[in-house]
Image 1 (cartoon, one colour):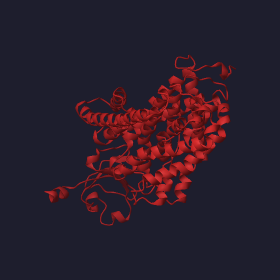
Image 2 (image 1 turned 90 degrees about the vertical axis):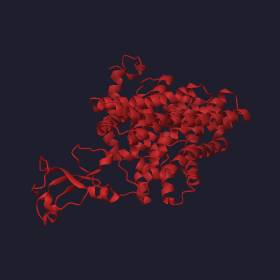
Image 3 (image 1 turned 30 degrees about the vertical axis):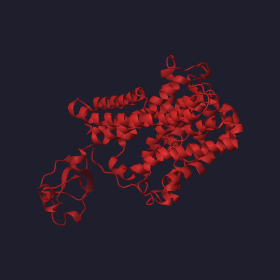
Image 4 (image 1 turned 180 degrees about the vertical axis):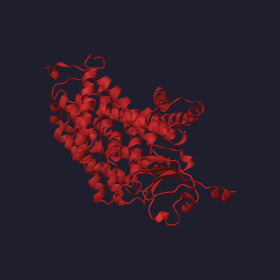
Length: 499
């Protein structure tokens, strides 16, 4: 038997496909275990990577630059899928809340955490803690809520929240990675310039404005341009549409980066517009493609990050990292949320408290820490180990308690019965698909569709009776237990009234 310590994995390793396939297979098998224990799947992927890495079975993976590049690619895919799945109709009422949290909220969290780190534990974390600039860099790396973690917990575990909290949390986590990344870039730039002066401050402000402005403009341009492209190009299947849409998203990221803007912001904005304005053909198949791709990216990214870490290197910084993590979760994050959302009085204190608790860390902060390592910032190894420790702490304490906390605050509710449409889908502008099971009460007026006298705007598209699918017509005799797929939309009476 060949010990794993003999393997050295990189992007050209002859063992790469074998090892990746085995790790992915094991990761998928342990998802069920995590579901039973209430553990986030992403935490299990991270732990699996650690178990087979240098501190466990001895698998070596040291290519930091490749890991940073591959991780950045993975997080763009995750953000892109999150943007495609974001509903503007649901997000519009809380758009301002999300924008404030993803900008001012991130800044305040980084500022408060950086000050605490410098004043309380800085002398215990090596070179990076000896200066306020280093502590602010460390805090900026951890300033955002990780989108992969939030999407995985809220959607994977089907947590249903009141006060529009689900779209707000998804919007915040999807849009605040760019702010944390921009702050990280700025502080790394300060390090390369040897410190901070008034001139350096204005340089940082210019970088911030340029990154946000270019990212937004490119995202808007590509998003609306995609509407024209998808309308003009006709392709033979959903798979090709998926690839075309992915290429448009990656184009937004790449173009924004070339123009010195923020690619993560660009791809997220473009994805929201594509998902809501572009009229994606065969959308159901396209979204299945991206859902599978996102799971693969999350799995590979967390496994890779787990392989990178050396658990023994986290021990010297464990205590200060614990203090920083607890301060961020219990003080900095709540303070930034309550201060940022102060103008929005309709949002209850319980809702703000829950938002404070959903400050999940994940792959995003670890990848931003890798950016500092690649940039050869002094003390960047301490940053990586501290951020990794805090990520584990966050996923265990916050990730495993999101459902109990929602129930404790009485912000969750039971899931509505899922609509069974047998794979059918219609354009959103035509109406909504709903299902209905025929009862004895429905048949009191008569047993045919015509005699049921359905309200205007409702049409029966399909009838399922046992294992048989029947095409409906007015004289069809229905039976109790028949399953109807109906479309709810505008009736001709509505149009006449408008005219």
